[in-house]
Image (tube, rainbow, N blue to C red; front, side, top):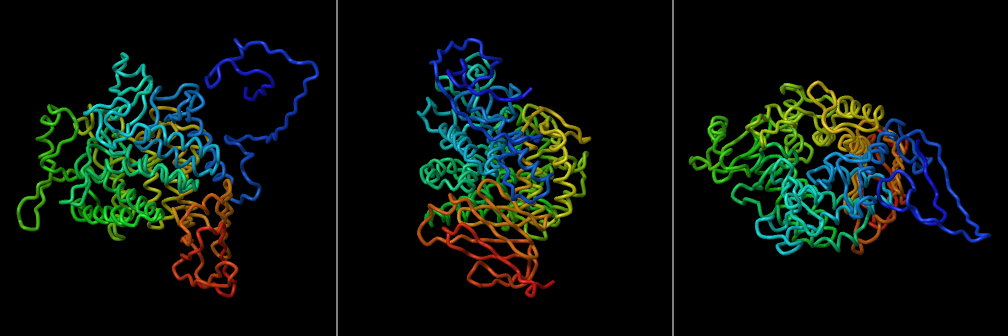
Length: 600
């Protein structure tokens, strides 16, 4: 049974908590003659999202509309715990009424980043507020010795907690998690596996920028930019200028895998992060900071192609001779001989042995990241995708998601011997895979192999499991939010191709030639052969420096001379892509292709 109750007088005895009724509510006296007025719009709805939010002018396949909204409102929206705890938190599973990993929330490794991305894509004012508050909850625990009682050794300056933990789960309260507490608010700076990940700092920052890009909350950005740069400084401190790469203490986003030192997963994602940060600093007028962040991206791109490239893929890591991962020393010594056997020694240009060794599992995730964010030049991207699609791993590559690696991560290659993620398909890797196919324009692989199976699963089941195992069957926690939100992200970012930057907007669809997408106050009316009109939410058109322009990029178009706006100016499209600039304050832009101007 489902429904709602309208409270006219009094209040529920236990607000913001799951209950089974009104027991304990004090009686309320009503004055004789009291009158009440009530109005509601009731929308009959057999779907798993509030259909009343869908504008009537939407023109897109129903399966896409359902999957986009179900992927957001059916999963991550149901994992927000703010109403229950009074603290803005998001869990990795929906409440039913408990959640998986009970008592542990705000995992920016990257779970909460995926959640926040998908949540912002519905352009809902209430959801935007929830997202902002979740970001601020984690932000409030930036490592600063003395703050929250943090001591030397608890964390490194600028480090963000891996996740929040209920007091009863913490060691100081008799639990098993190594926590730091301030009153009854507790965090841990380590993953459940015991790893120290780069992910929380990387993905919290990307989530914060995503919130600003989609909401237009530039006031929040300016207020919190100092903290954002503090969080990023934790990563900057790990830059090794000799090699041009960042030295990671542990894995990026698969916490059980032993990846550290000059690792391709962390470095690949940092190229994307620093490009985003450079865009933000240019928007704010901070030219020097923008140039510094852009140099990081350029240096890492160059170094990955120089040091980590091996014929047709990027290796897992280059391990510096002075580095070891953050496992116990005895485990490290036990595995050293095996690593020596696998290692490939490289030489410096002067002929001397380089002070690093290569370690390689042919990781699908880091290689797809490298293609997705332009690290791999076109020929190398082609080679990577050919290697990935050859499916040499024991389980293949694509079965309801994307597999982790070609070579198996065994007990010696994981924290605590935990091989739970060594033999699975993951939603987060599927997201990187989809962006990689967008980068190279591989519509067939994206639509038929990547999107269709998981979109079908979502529409059939509403809620999905945490992983898929080797045979393609669901595995691990039910009601997990990763796959549903990744489906929503794949639709928004790749199929409909919407990218909103600080002073840019792009519509570059893959797999669809005509549609009208209307979400919140964002409207995209697209026909590749006739016209396109983009209307931005008003919040995205205020708050920039006077005179700033916005770059508009539209892809997938019929070649020919397109008319831009009402002025009659034109742009000749020869490669399917139109680019123009408009004033930042301009809410809408329209382009059309007269029938006499088209060309094949």
